[in-house]
Length: 368
Length: 271
Image 1: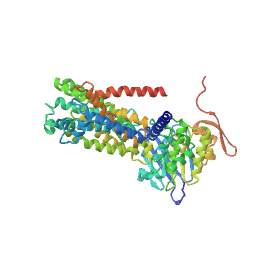
Image 2: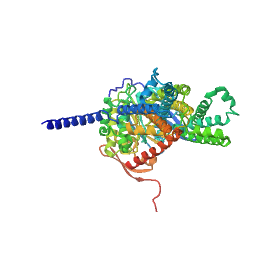
Image 3: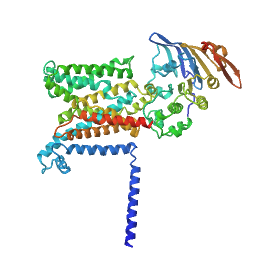
């Protein structure tokens, strides 16, 4: 009797669990924007926590909690590590990742080309040139720059380099008050090559020490993240992310063609100007503090688009979340793979992003 | 659809002495015509005659070199893009879209300001039904066939002017080019029906019999000039067709005009 009862009870419980699982799966439709959003927020929380606890001084969750709350009982070293080293690093990684992914999504929409990347309009190449120029010539020709700006000299040089290249491209691509996006893109390719050559010449004349620091810079890193860096770029990145989101509706119309967006009532020249300006600001600021980090801007919007669709109102915020999660996650990897040394995060991203992107292309071409 | 012609004073579209040069090429020369609301007008002409250029200028994509375009008696330049979008919709030639927008999202982009992008608006449903593409609603646009894409774009165009505050202008550049014969008739019939309710439509087409059947007037272009602007039975004559297209054709009256195309007057036979 008791045996039969137990059997019934067990089955009832199993049945309950099954229906519970099924209904929660249905409610959590992962292809819906809300489902994707929840999943990405959880993921971001997860990797951020991971980013806070791993490192040369591993922390338990309890230590993290006491450190975060600066409790009187907390070890001062833990508080220091949590607040001064890991927190700015995780926050910077999240902001840079969000900004790069979002700028990538906006550029792809603007150019109506799923392979566009924020680097295409020349921001990254120009920023690299600016940074390398300061690293190599900072002691001689550009000494005044260092004296004037001090610690800000390098990020500022990178940012200015990026902005200048985009400005040049923008003006070359203008005809009769309108900007031809195809010419803008081609112009970006050409100017990128020129900036690359300039960077090459500077690399050639650099001495050993300069060479080491420019190589390190050009592979991208979050290792030197500090509150000072964060307060320098966070306003630009946050501002860019918010205003890029405001372009979601016109960008949807852009997907049908620039002329169609105009017929639907959008001021297309203004949309283009804002998109390019905001992408330059955010990507320029990101590169200035973290160095060039590729693939986030290319791969993330691609993933999200095939996951939840092309509507920019969803695509942009979800890309920002996913980009943040990816970069914080990649930073965890870069800190732990060869610990106690660190891999540059740009390298980790290329190692992760390249093969996944290829796998995606192969799967897609196999599906067709 | 709630459009009535209240002020019959100025025509919906007036084009006067319109010219357009691009570099050294003179693409449009002294074009002038009027289009009233309630009219369905076909724009005909051989390849390179300037039909698409004219549509582009009328749509405001490019500024004219000289001459004037007035919509509701007001110069085109004086309209803001936003105001213009309320009284004028444009369907360009078939264009590739490489992003996976859903069909309902494409149609919802046509809705007026404030509703734009709202896929749940009943008008989206209505337009999808009108163009017989409800079953494609959730599909991704780039996966559709050319004809299906054209019908979805047409639904978007009609959604834009369906509740227009004033008689709207439709500019359609080869809106039937990818459709099967039945759908070509269906769409041109639909355009004719809505012009009867106050819309003015100018459509580029290559099929002479479609023009004969559905146009109130035909504009015939050649080498950037407007040659004739008249009723179909005055334009679709063997003489005009021979002169403009180099086409040998008979035109018979079979309860309506029928053009029987016989062959090409120019070129050489192989061998």
